[in-house]
Image (tube, rainbow, N blue to C red; front, side, top):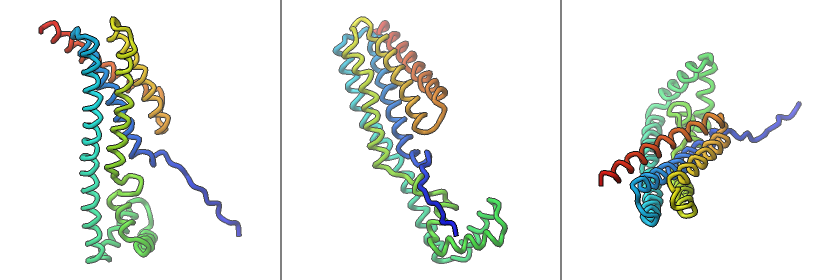
Length: 233
C-alpha cells in the first residue's frame, strides 16, 4: 500500500486573530496621532505644544486601545464560554437529540442522511463538545477569542504607528509641520496597508489605496477644524 503523505498546511485565516488587532492598532495610531498633530498645528500652536499634544495622544491612545480590545474581546470570550457550557449540558441531558442536530447540519451541507448520521456518531464518539462547538457554534482554535493577545497586539502596534507622525514633528522643519506630518503619515499608512494585505493574502493595491484614502480624509477634516477653531479663538 502507498503510504499517505502528511504535511502541515499553513492557512492565512490562522492569522486573523492577531492580524486584525495589529492592523487596527497601527492604523489607529497613525491616523489619530497624525490628525491630532495636524489639527493642533493648523491652530497655529507652537512646536512644543504640538509635541506635547502628540505625546499625550500617543500614551492615551495606546492605553485606550489595549483596554478597549481587552474588554471587547473578553465579551466575545464570555459569550463563547456561555455557549459551550450550555452545549455541554445539552450533550449530557440529551445526547441523541444533539446527535440528530449534528446530523441535520451535515445533511444541509450536502451529505447523504445515512453518511451524515455516521459522521455525527463518529465525531461525537471522539469529542462531542468539540464537534458541536465547531460545526454548530462556529467556534474553533483559529477563531476563538484571545483577549490578552488582542490587547497587547493593539497597544504595541498603536504605539509603533503613533510614533511615526510624532517623529516627523520632532525631526521635521518647524515651518512645514503640517505638510511633513501629513506626507509622512500617508506614506506610513500606504506601507501599513501593503504589509497588512501581504500578510493576510489580500490585494495590495486595493488595501493600500483604502487605508491611505481614509487617513487623508481624517487628517484633512481635523486640520480644517483646527484652523477654524484657531482663527475663532
